Length: 200
Image (tube, rainbow, N blue to C red; front, side, top):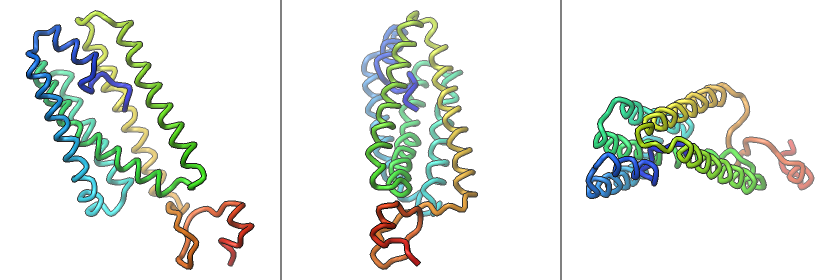
């Protein structure tokens, strides 16, 4: 989701300025995007309450994110700003879902490694799209970057959807709880076994 030019960043801003979009429109677009991103933080708990499943909440939110981006392929410059701003609603809701999924389903001792890999991955994707932007540097070709970005988000959406179906059908418990007398679900590490956790 980070390998995109549809983020009100430097590439998109430079293109819109080249197209003659007034600066105050660009500032307004970023402000509206921030508001929709904030709304996403309020939407997440409400949506999760009704969905009763964090992975399903993530599924809904990533499809909402994609749904706001697809019309950009045929929209005007100002409409592009609007759709990008509104897409922040789905993006930040999905981001919160991924964070909670990681907290609930990754062993505590592995969270640092998973978090580091995630950070490295999205920074690499961001760097890659900047390099592509330098290669396809003619503003008249910016639409190729737009279509590529939407294609990447669509691919990520399909991958997450497939994961959600696999996760939903899996018999492996998806939550780890402290072994403090409560029922513990999930995997028991070798260290925990040595300490007597998970014994029947």
